[in-house]
Image (tube, rainbow over the protein chains, first blue to last red):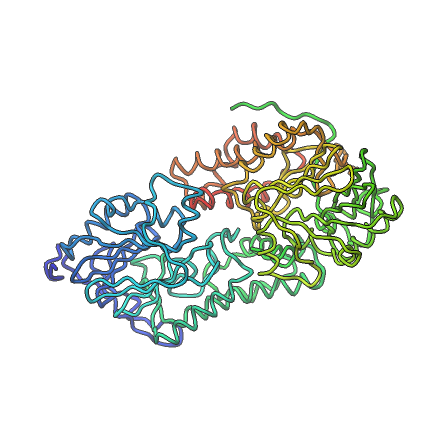
Amino acid sequence: MKRLSAISIGFFILLAGQLMPLGEQGIVLASTLLSDRTEDLGAGLYAYRSNERRSFFLISAEGVIVIDPLNESSANSMRKEITKLSDLPVKYVVYTNSFYDRSSGGKIFKDEGATFVAHEECLVELTETPNPNVVMPDVTFQTNYTITLGEQTLDLHHYGPSYGLCFTVAVPRPANIMILSDVISPPSASLPRDPTIANYNLYVLMDFFDQVEALAVSSNIKEVAAGYAPLGKGYASTSPVSLISEQRRVWEVLLDEVEIQYNKKFPARVIPERMDMSRFEDFVGFEPKYIKIMSRRVYSLYRIGRR
Amino acid sequence: MKLNSVKSLALTLTVFYSLMAWLVPASAQYIPGLAPTALEDLGDGLFAFRAGGYRNIFLVTSEGVIVTDPLSSDKAKLLRDAISKITDKPVKFVAYSHSHWDHVSGGQIFKDEGAKVVAQERCATNIKETPHPDVVPPDITFKDSYSIKLGEHSLDMHYFGPSHDDCMVVMIAKPANALFVVDIGSVPKGFFMEYNPTLPDDNLHNMPQFLRATEALMAREGVETVVSGHLAVDIDDDGTMTPAASTGAPSAIGDKALFWEMLFAFVRDEMEQGASADEAPDRVLADQQFQDEFVERIRAGFEPDEMWILLRRVASYVEAGR
């Protein structure tokens, strides 16, 4: 493995976020920017940025594991970043969900012999709606799966429908950082970027958070990393694990606000006008117009019982 | 693709019960002269029953009755009363169009008289996962198609994959040879704006395909009439609303397929030119071709803010493939 000191981009920028308290916890993150695209999260785990999206790779003594290639351009660029750190091949590519914006572009890794791993429902979806830029998974699993490569392991967990049907939680070890490619966005609890809340399975979303929180406790996980978050704007791609509970609170407030009005028999297009917007003000992405749109989507959860 | 403009004076808009409740207090009359319920004899033993903005169909045979979506406990009682005025035969089957509570609640009254509930197999899964005290789980499930035969009649249920939820079916009542479609299509105007533009539980990746499969089914079966699961209203130029006909031509289904195909194409074009999912709605709305070819076909159902939401939802589909 190439030494970090040989990296052509020879500066190590201490994140502004490391100097600033995050919330009330005063957490200082240990990650380090290696370039404007790659962030060393420690213990062989790296975050790779492509615009506002992030993927991850895990370097071991026997090869590399990539988590979400994103798209062809990003994958090619990520491959170059990996080469700066290791001359070993990418042995595995993991999909955290089936959506094209995360699962496209893996061919460059397939060509060097990587095995593609995804939850079995991802395979179903990618078979139903194939995309020429998405490499089909070679290995699928139902509930849990562990990839072991050299001194690294990557544990994959599926907790039923959540963000899509096959959203997968990844925990690399020994880094022991929980990777939630979607669902959270460090450093703070935030409203969903897409106000139509497409692909969120609201009817089981709280169950999902229950299970993820339980995993964090049982595995003594202290940090989470996400697939969306600006880089170089003062904070890192990781947050304290408490972000999961904070993000859960966003959904609880949204569901609760709509349910209160729904139970009062107010129709869908009246509910947004009756919601207490002050409850959302502290969440990143607060925009009343968007919350009103979200309320329409949530209304249907109570009306029809699904998604 | 250049489409002809729709210039009808009587504009048609699908209006759901809750939308009407938004327009005026729930207890009031939304449309002058509109009765809370309506029963319509469509011939050959087929009847359409409307309660508020919801509609179902039922088949009266010499051996009993086949009911579709019971709608709710209250509406099912009204439906039962309506059936009793036509026949003293028992309800033998209840056919669910899909799994959403607002259509399949209320079947217990029919279950109590011995009816069997029929639904696509994924509906059983959905109802098990998200049970509702007013929803009777199905007794009979099927994968692709199922024919309920009773006396000289049949109700054929057809599944073409996920659409609005993942177990939606269309039904053909025979010998009336009329198609019953719920939520994913409407008559008499097929090219209609979605009531909830966030599209809860819609599977866009298969929506046009489902509708095109339905169109092909109707052609094979010689279907000439379509009945839809919601009341549509005609809006005159002065804003006066009157109930639209409960039936329409099969072309309405193809028109809705075209609605989705065009919408996907407009959004995809913008995103292929570099628009993000967040930018695509505004760009599409600013596109004169979109206004001329798409909006013009909707007319009465067009609200820019509502269309923005729908376009944003479609952008997520284009981006993610789901």
